[in-house]
Length: 324
Image (tube, rainbow, N blue to C red):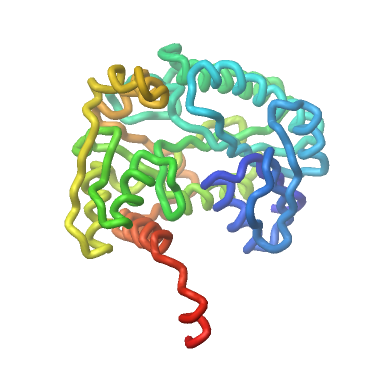
């Protein structure tokens, strides 16, 4: 792997991938609308609105490879508008720069399923958010088939990890445990559900950046630790914190009612198929090609819980620092 790597988006996965690449000595540029509070040494920043074609083109200039790790407001109406616009901009920039692209994606485009999710499943038209993800999938697949871009899609389910607050088991799960409180879930706590660990996802992004061209034009499912329930995962975190696990959960049937007052809950209703049945990911394709170094929950959940507790710890006073 050589040359400039431009990472669009500095959320949990973009940040973790940036840190890993920087630690390996790669030249990295982060591009998004607002400057991060801090960046690893040597990493540069370029302000960029991904809905502005000229800004995306400028941010990608000189790139050998691109990572798309952006997110938008959790709204089906918004996604149907902004995701196709953003993807057009990314594809145009990739074609102009001839940079290879790793697109960090989710699994919404499969819609409701009862079997473990596989890369060969058809794209769904169910619901606004799944339809939006299916639409942009068709866009990049067409561009790849025509030879205009080299793009690999890395798909993952809900993720978790240190510093990951916007997750089903983030602030309301591990975060509340770190405060010594009961976890509050917007999902069934005893339904088997796959979760991906963010440091694993960052390694997988780098694996694709380092892979030969034949890995591109394809979809890859990121491996997850052995399937557990949210309660089982949080129990590992609670044990690491030395506290008794307490969990409360909002029943799925209440989402439309609560959604009258909370638009975010209303948006979750169309995605209830992720939580009203076991939700598992088949990553055998990835494992056969790249192996499996996934982090077990006994490590990941422990590290995540401890990180949230550290975030809650008060800063030492000046007097304490002076006498240390």
